[in-house]
Length: 84
Image (cartoon, rainbow, N blue to C red; front, side):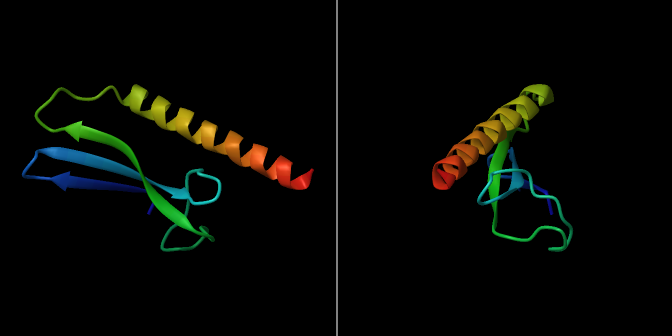
């Protein structure tokens, strides 16, 4: 699974989680464990008020893209330090 959608009915919230590789923080792609070797974790992608207006999905996507880019840069810096 790449995405999880979790409802909190009592608080009327929807939580969206994205599956990421633990080491790189990049989006995990795979099905039933195939094509997704290594350690993975669930990362919060969005919290949506079900009684509120529809979220701006482009902002949600942009926020997650910026987070992933930051994680990739940190991993690259760490790898370069180890190679030096």
